[in-house]
Image (tube, rainbow, N blue to C red; front, side, top):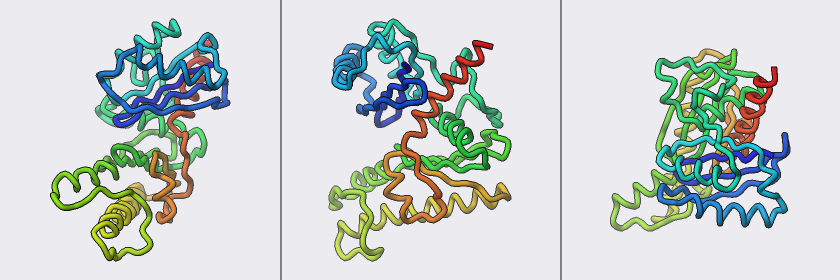
Length: 260
């Protein structure tokens, strides 16, 4: 079995795969100060509840955009599974994609994993919209190369900044409003944060496709993807486990390379 870890800026997701089958996934808030033992108390309990033996974990793969938290994850894997995680971006791990950028090392690991899994599934020019801490747009060309993308502030990040900079605005839930025109402070904020991002995504997707000069498939992933996709006609599919399945694919790709 494979333990796949997606360590993001806001949350870390741990998942266990038995070959292609996803047995379970669990989310915890990302904290640089979290120790290896804290991860162990949390995850080992969840594995036990789900009848997954720690001894069945034979490999770990890690995608991280928080380098400061990597050491604790590595110590956790070494101490409790006797394994060192394969790290996306490390020289000893091959990625089945060409990165057509001058500074390839600057691309976030999660963005590369998403691009790889999207290409594996669809084999088309792609725009992958990830509604995470940042709202990212990643572009794959007709040959499966990663050619760049766009990074915008995330939905919750923008909402937090709005609250912080305005003394009288309340906390609001991100939800689809009934109308664009808000009739109260709360509904006006909800409309702004919802339809504002609908417009942002529609506009950026349209401009990317026009610049690329070819029809592109658009998929969405991330925590708020399903909420926003209902109002964004350009988004053809929402794929919730894109990153985790991408990690599983990358691991199997490397294992097959070693066996040749």
